[in-house]
Length: 88
Image 1 (cartoon, helix red, strand yellow):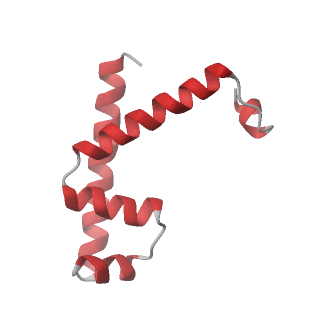
Image 2: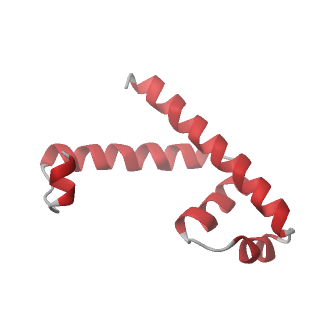
């Protein structure tokens, strides 16, 4: 399957896996607190630096870094829980 992605080819099964993973990520993000969800999206989706995230969230840079670390850890936990429930 890695070769399919590397070569840019998508099969129906690889597309289904991508869709399932995207749905699991959306569900896990939805279970985060609003602050955790926002900081994870700002850092990991928008790729903003911590000083900009801190400015937008009205926090210090250090506080933003700590919040992101806690939020990202919670997201990983939610994704692991999702995998366990799905029997993966």
